[in-house]
Image (tube, rainbow, N blue to C red; front, side, top):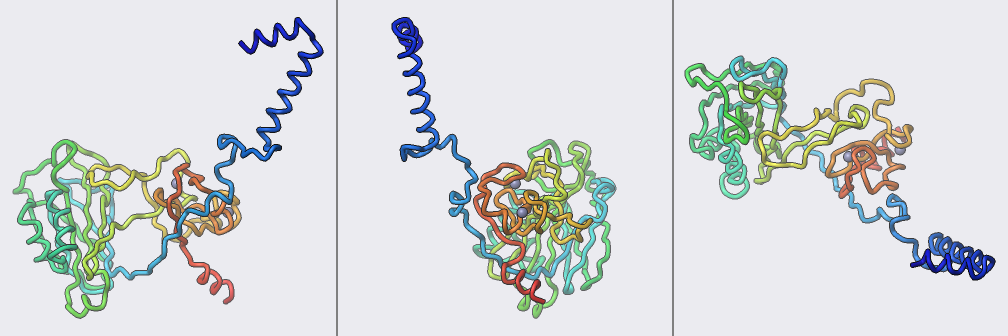
Length: 326
Ligand SMILES: [Zn+2]
Ligand SMILES: [Zn+2]
């Protein structure tokens, strides 16, 4: 229609045709560049303009001392038939209660009971909450600051070769750490730690790893402990962690411990300016990749493009000031 009009116009008067096309060009350019006070179409606007990110909230930080330390000593060697080795390092005398083949639903009910009626501060409380829905249970005393490795096996008389195809109804291993002494329970906000461990078996061979680690507080709350993804150690093509889910078979990228020693100089440089130290963690993707200066320029994570809903600093501005002033 417009082409026919232009063709007819050109036949009528080439000069007038050129003038009309020129005026249309000028008006369009003016609209796009905002010459007439009309707002620029949203599609042409940079979504990461600094004035558009004021809505991202900053999470307040709370420092909590966790008296429990549990990690898998050699994930590659762990299997259901060969057992698993756990490295335990606790600040106080503790008791480790392990439950093999624990029913998934019972574990989550136990966490709910901790919040609403029966706080889990002792092995007995956990046993009552699980109502016997596990294959095997054992307990080990863990002396304070022992840093020892404990090898755990599911006894052969259970003759369990695997926990069946996914989705599964049982966790291979659930480990509960509780404080032995009553006075320690008064001292620490974190009263127990519940760790859910995946152990490879015949039908599901993903390497041994911690699926969930819950910190249970004396005030009847629990927090799912998550690790952060540091920019220097994450490969750009690896996806970030899946959103939190109750699925036992959740697969996540290998997380990096935030408090590990930096592997090389500048290993924790900001991914954008490559100059300042990383200080901000973006949520929900948990990428720690931006410095103080670059944070305000981003509404999406520069590593995974996920929309940033919240942020929190690794080091408060006052703390940074104090360190630099020393
Ligand atoms: Zn930066
Ligand atoms: Zn991200």
